[in-house]
Length: 286
Length: 322
Image 1 (cartoon, each protein chain N blue to C red):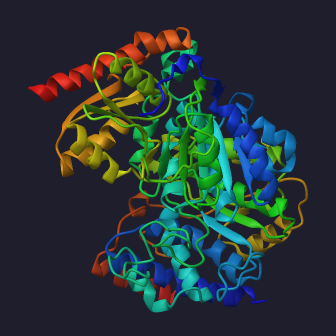
Image 2 (spheres, rainbow over the protein chains, first blue to last red):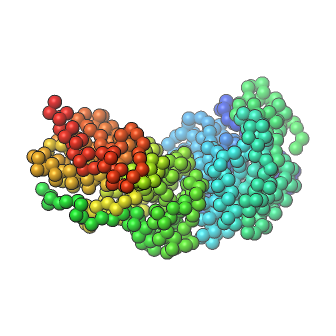
Image 3 (cartoon, helix red, strand yellow):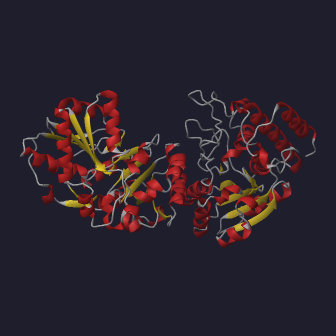
């Protein structure tokens, strides 16, 4: 298992990939990708997610579903780093042409399931229309339990996303069925497209809500590697309850002018902005 | 010519009763199969599967969006999934989730709806789903079937169970006359000529197929020779048969317990307009909402009856002569 310093170096590299993808496409969502990437780095490269990039359909693999599918640059950069797809494929993000069997891109604006004809290996569901990933994760967790398989299903939601009523239908169901093979992460970066989540429609308090629905809730700083590692370690030991990791994060984390600014939810940087961002990410401490 | 019958004297059976029975049969031979419902399992008859295989049945409660999301999750792992509720709740409420998960990814989920159409009766307009075929037909990858009777329901299920694609299968609440012979074979994308005729064609689905047969027999006495086609497979649709019957009779009436907008009538209109423009009259629920009342009285009131259909057939013949 890699140490924290190595993980941070990986995250630095992935942040550069994210910004480069969005810059190349001149389209995409940098803010919510940057808030999520430290958690994804620990999940995929810190020894928690059980997977084999050479065998994406391995029956006993753990599943990860990015319910907040607009953070697809984060997922795609991770899948390239993990070896599911070649790194050069990242340049096909949001482009017409790419690596799908019919010549179109597999890196759609929002992720398509690996069984979809334009899906990317390693994507466990089609997401992006918000609110659906938790229900899908429940279906996969139920299926695993039914087949006596020990795989876990991880799913990441956005904070704005839980304004969707469907996520609470799902929360109620998972609590009722005591799905302890389900580990959800809520990327609480406080911002949605139109502004501050608390000002648009407040979703807080989260911990009390999920606990009331029968979940085990862990609250962490989503950029503190030790806290992320401890949360995943604890999540894997909980029995009889689904697990919700509420991760407090910074939207745009790592690029100074993007941090905590909702305007960077779904906007691509200009050439000048791109160069500043890469300069910061390359030279900054980790 | 087929033997003249009176549909009112035929045995009747609700398609949902057949659905419940066939689910149990299929569950025995397919251990990967799971069934979901949303608090209407007694009404949809999925409770029979629940009793037989309690581990493989999940009740989502009154939460149809989550129902569809979970169905998708189960199908992503390779299972054959059935999800049922009333047509209004399974095709209407979670439509966008059906689109994003089941249709987009061509998942092996069978959405089997009961209580389609206005024969829901006394529950009234809120529960009478006349727009579901339209909503489902427009989705890429989605197959849409409206079986005519319980015999066909069984044949459809036993065929499509093994086709790993999304299906929308629509049933009514009431008992329908059993008009198809036991040796009938359902074929996806194929219509079935129940009665040959030369003056006008009726292309129908669901309960309207039996009414079309009755209308045809009654019109024989008036010297009108009606061809009756069961078009249960609405998507894919039998383009060749539609063109062939239009060429033969020169006038087509579509008949369905669904809005005349977007369903079978529209599907047939699309085929004819693009390939062989023909006089067409659409018989179904007009562009309106239903009303409460006993099922068959509501059907009669909205013109979904043998007499209502006969009027439309005559209208088509009048247009043809002009």
